[in-house]
Length: 363
Ligand code: HEC
Ligand code: HEC
Image (cartoon, rainbow, N blue to C red; front, top):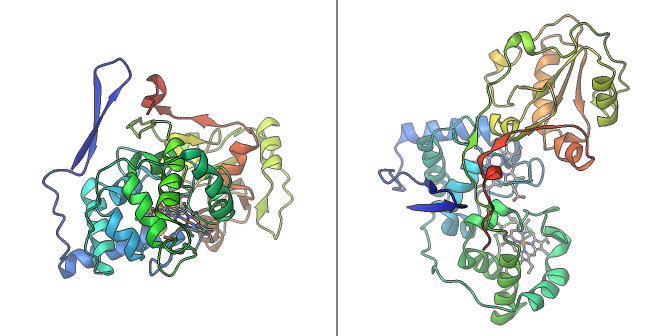
C-alpha cells in the first residue's frame, strides 16, 4: 500500500506508504487494545474526546462514524494521523513529520479505531469522477459553505479544501462522504437532496482546488537546549493584562518580544507543528508529554511563561493548568493561538519543508 511522488526535476522520489509488512487485521488482542487506548487518551482525546465522539476542541471531527472509518481505513487514516492537515489544529504525529509516533504506533491506532466500531472496510473505486466544476462551485456555495467555509477552509466542519486532505482523499471517498454523510454528526447524507450528477459536479469542484501539493518529510531542526529556554534573559519581565486571569493578547506578546522582555514561550502543540512553524524563541512542550516532565528545566523564579497552541486554547490550557498546579504563578496562554497569529502577520520562524525547495507539481 504505497504511493510515490516524483518531485520536480530532480530524480528524488519520496515514498509514503503503509509498510508492506504491516498487520492490518482488525482483531486486536487485549494488550494491543490497551496500548492503543492509552495512546489515544494521551495524544488524541484532547480534541476528539475521550470516547472518539469528536468536538471536544476546535471542531475536531468524530472518529466513530462508520461511513468515515469504513472508507478512510487504512490509507486516509494513516495519512491524516501521520501528516495532519495543513492549516488546522490537526498536526502530524509521525516521526517523519517531527511527531512522537512510529509507523507501527499509527497502524495500531488505526486498527483500534476501526475495531472499536467494528467496521468492515469498503473497497472504493479508483476512478476520477467527471463533473462540471463551475456548477459544483455554485452548489457548494448554497449547500456546503455554511459549515465548510466559503473557500473550504473549514469553519465548524473540516477543511475540505485542505491540500493534505485533497492529496489523500480519492474522488470516490469524497463522493461517498457526500452521499452517505457522517452518522451522528452535522454532516447529513445528501443522497435525497442532490442528484447524482450534482454530486459529481461537487466532487469535480472540490478536486479543482487541489494544487498537487503532497506531504514530504521535513528537515527536522534540533530542539532548543534548556540554556536557550529563556528569551532576553537579561531583560525585565513584561507587564501583561490577562483576560480572565489567564489569556494574554497576541499583540502584548509581540510588544514584549520587541521590547526584549525576559520570558519563556512554550509551544504546546505536537513536535511536528513546532518543526513546521513557531513563534521566535518558542520551546516545544507538547501537551501529551508525561506530566512529570512538563516542568522539566523551567525556572520557577517568577519568569513569565506564555504558552500557545492552535486550538486556540485546549493544549496550552492543559500545560498552563499543570504549571499552575506546581506553583508557577506568572503563566499565561496566548489568546488567539498560532493560527490567528500567523493570519495577523506576526513574526514566526518557518521550518525547512523539503517540498519548498522543489517545484510544486500541478495536477
Ligand atoms: C489539537 C486538536 C487535535 C488533536 C490533539 C488531534 N486532532 Fe485529529 N483532528 C483535529 C481537527 C481540527 C481535525 C479536522 C481537520 C480539518 O479541518 O480538516 C482532525 C482530523 C482528524 C482526522 C481526519 C478525520 C476525517 O474525518 O477525515 C483523523 C483520522 C484524526 N484527526 C485523528 C487523530 C488522532 C488519531 C489523533 C491522536 C494521535 C488526533 N487526531 C489528535 C484536531 C486534533
Ligand atoms: C451543517 C453543516 C454541514 C454542511 C451544510 C455540510 N457539511 Fe460536510 N461535514 C460537516 C461536518 C461536521 C463533517 C465532519 C463530520 C465528522 O465528525 O466526521 C463533515 C464532513 C464532510 C466530508 C468528509 C471530510 C473528511 O475529512 O473525511 C466531506 C467530503 C464533506 N463534509 C463534504 C460536504 C459537502 C460537499 C457539502 C455540501 C453538499 C457538505 N459537506 C455540507 C458539516 C457539514
